[in-house]
Image 1 (cartoon, rainbow, N blue to C red):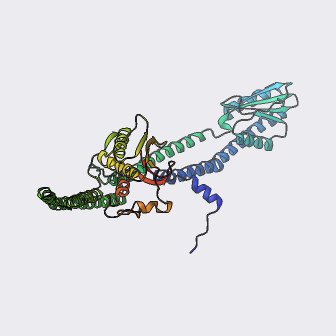
Image 2: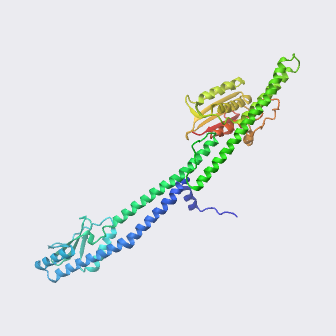
Image 3: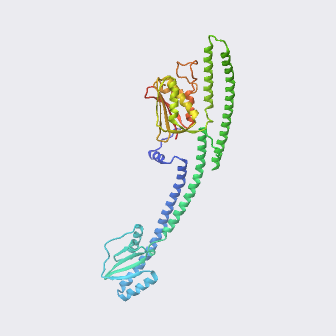
Length: 447
């Protein structure tokens, strides 16, 4: 079944989504909570706050209309005094008549426009005369003015008579509850994600040959099950490594014993024509055994130390010069890395020795990477390796040079050992064309 490609908007959203489990889990919790809070707040303002404000405004507008009509029926100071006294006692309204005044021209409106719109609508439905109002001049009061024939009837009303002033308390409680809920959710998710991160760190450390002795399964049941499976797998692999190490030690002892006897017999035997050839064969056999054991052992038991990369490159350059090549070293004066010294030195010697065998000029260089890692390059001016055979060169016992034969030194394990060491440190080795014209082996190590 062929899957249809995602539309453009879906691909854009997918690219902007978090890629980590922590980010996605947080998004799953935070987004619904925020949507819920927004929906509840909107429903509250639309169905409750606006409705209550509208009822209060209508009540206030009715009281203002009663005061205006009562004064218009008998526009005398005595009637105004009676109206003002009744409004003060029963409606909490302060009423005064400004003789000869007119309504203000400027209009001042509040930040929440729904309050002004609601009050204006209520006043317009109850008053026939021109009116003016201001909800911003006095924080706790509303100023309403009605145009009368002899002046302006001014009404000062408490703000809670026109607006539901306690709405912010509901919003505040809703916000506090949301923050508390999100805080608990974030702590819970963080604890679950931390268990997975620790499992990933333990697996990565084990892949580099390190051991995390205090790692214990914790977290959700599924995470604990995965951690327990990892511990069982690690124990099986360690038992296999220990058995292989013991077997290699036994094989090494069993093979070196007859080789030693042969060397002793050759040394004690009278000179004969094939003596030197036989000594060369014994040297080659011993070298092959060393290569096999080094490849199988992998130097996994060596502890990681902080070493000087320039110093290691200079030592590798000295070994390469003994093979007859001209070697240059380009590296910062100070560049440290956390490595297994013996294993990594062996990888460098294999690469530098291979470059010295196939080229006359060899260049060793190192530089820090922007990501915090280190790149080490070994280049030569030899014939190089075709691009389509770079991966083939890393296969154990691979001998790409047709001119080599079993009588030449080496068994095709140099690049395989070097890559095994680099990957054991969390990095890798890649091959490419060198500026010198030959092969370039680049070792990239994480920070």
